[in-house]
Every structure is written in C-alpha cells, then in structure tokens.
Image (cartoon, rainbow, N blue to C red):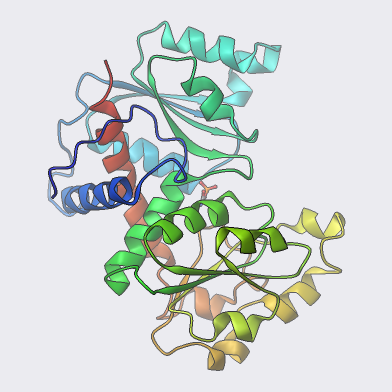
Length: 310
Ligand code: CP
C-alpha cells in the first residue's frame, strides 16, 4: 500500500475525490478483502466507535454490506429506519441527526431520496458522514466497488472501454461510475433511448449512443442499469417489452460483444428486462463478485474516514 495520507472525515461523492484518493481506497479494500477470507473474519479497527446506519430509502445490498463491514471492523452499530423514527412525526432531518450526534456517535451512513441530503448534513455535523446513495446524484461506494471489480478483472483503467446501458438520466450509479472511470483514464459510453440518455453528458467527455450493438462493440465492460417500471408510466419509453427488445442484453446480441467482455449490474436486476437471466447468471457475469467486493470497499471507506475524526 502507498504512504498516501487520507484526510476526509466524510465520503459524499466520487466527484470530490482525486484519482490518487480513489486508488488509495481500492488498495485499502484489497487488504480488507483478505479479512473476509480468514477463519476469524473480524479486526478491531473500529473498536470503540459507534456507527449509525440511517436509511431513509429502501436498500438490500448497500445496507447489509455496510452493517456487515461495521461488524467486521468491531464497531458498535445502530440501525434506524424511517418508519420507526420521529421523521414520521414531522421532525426535520437535521433535528433528527443532531439528536443522534448528541449521543456521541462517530459516523452516520445515510441513504436518502433527496439529492444533497448527506452533503447538507456533513456541513453541519462534527461526526463523519458516508453517502450510501442520494437521489439521482451520487452512490460513491457503488462506484468504488464497481471500480474495484473492474481493476481486479481487467488489471487497469487506462484506455478501457466501459459501456453503461439503461436509465442514465435517473441513475446515481451511472454518474458515480462515470466520474470514477474518467478520473482513472477509462473511456465511458452511455447508451439507451434518447429520453433516458441526455446529450449533455457528451460535454463531460462521455460517448452518448442510442444503439445497443454500437454500445457493445469494443466494450471491455458492459454495465446494465435497472429499468424502473414507473419510467414507462412517465412516458420515457412506450413499453417494457419494447425497451427490452431494443436495449435489453440477451443471447441474441452476444455476437456484438468481445469474447472477454464482462457483464456488471448494481442490482436489483429486473430479469428479462435490461438483462436476460442466462447472462446474469452466466460465465461473463461478475454481479455477485460486485456484491462481495462491496463489503471490502465499505470496510475500507469506514476505516479511512474514521481515522480522520477529531
Ligand atoms: N446497488 C444498490 O445500491 O442496491 P441496494 O439498493 O439494494 O442497496
């Protein structure tokens, strides 16, 4: 590991991080991945620290892997869900977290449907804040686990072609992956219907494409995004069947892919819509490895930010 010094008490977005900081997290995660392969899967790195998992939006992978990461680091853990909190009685988010902080907690891991909610809190709290996904804005630990998986499989990022396909417009994963990949020297393509892939992304250095075979050709990594059924009701595309027929990844379009191209998906998958089951569970898929790597990445993030708390 390098002698790079981590200085952030919060992790809010990939956009904020330098390439060096991203690589430092990935290197740290590599060390933590070894912990989960031991017989005793626990280290005392966060002993005496209290972490609050505050998920105001549903989550399976992110919430469970943060909690497991905290357990493996020996932290004390509190889980708060909206339904059982006083947010339901009309308490403001800031009042709620100020009260949590008054109990001398060290870190808050937050998922929220409102863009910027973790940034708003981080500016007002002394404890650390880790963004577990906010609105369509940012999902930094998902991007970090995607980057970790890509590096593990492909070795490096320079010149690597990564195609991200689906509902780019509403995706915090697409935005976070994009910033991380561009900072590390990869080429990014966003693909999908014109209604879901805004042209403005070209200005950031992304190739925008509305044709699936074109997006697949030459791609080293193909990352599918979940298509939400409510987008059809909002008129972004005519029907799920038509979306799937034109942009769904299935065996009929495999011929356009490089033999060693790998398939990723952040989950949850809409099987048979953006991705056929045969491919989601096939040999090119690294989807469950992404989940495994998410644990190591979240252990690394918690360890690094906890080291910067006053
Ligand atoms: N990838 C992801 O964020 O999944 P969850 O919503 O289940 O956490």
